[in-house]
Image (cartoon, rainbow, N blue to C red):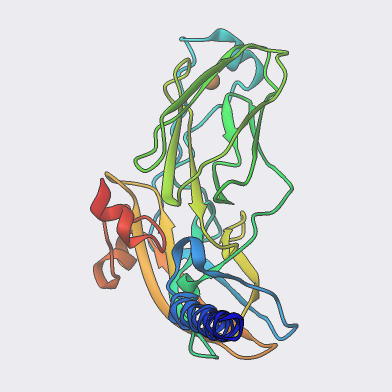
Length: 293
Ligand SMILES: [Cu+2]
């Protein structure tokens, strides 16, 4: 009788151990194929040291529209600080265009993975968006999802910063002169978030919110440089404001290991005729969001 009980117990123990082992193995195979599917389970990208650079210049072809002087009657404090306040939608110097956002839209790394399959850590440094001379500085900028924006007021007047995104919540805060900086961030990617000032109708800025750090904005001389790009072949987009939602130019580039790729773009009337304009604001690397909204 006693022997029989021991035997049953022993068999039970063996069966249970086998079951536990089988379920552990089952779990492992379930996790395998999901690791590269993007979203919350995507792997964090780690630089390996063979990253390269995408750089170039953006030209403005033809005669650029002259900047228009802004009437500051709505707030004399703006005119007193900057009597020559002018529009910023086409900042052209020697045929080169400033304030163009250049970013990687999609692409495949040399190891065959898609850039959208990787996750990238947002920088801990905040991007400062200053209200200065009754303009936003910078006029065009790029941050990563959840990266902090530090909003400052350097003017002797009150501003009202108003982000009007499509994929993120509306955000609208007044900031009197001398007030402490405001902080904001965006939880979802968006190309690009328009910014306006409810006090000064001419004040406009654009903030790109990306899931990766591969973006740059052209300087006064039209140049830009995107560093730390893993070797691969990418679709690079140059975006410039104007029209309903801006104009885009697209180019394929291949970044060799530890090398560089050139991406030169042209905007302007003459360039538009042969270019690839798109009037669509697209969320970067975020196809499901397009369906949602
Ligand atoms: Cu303002």
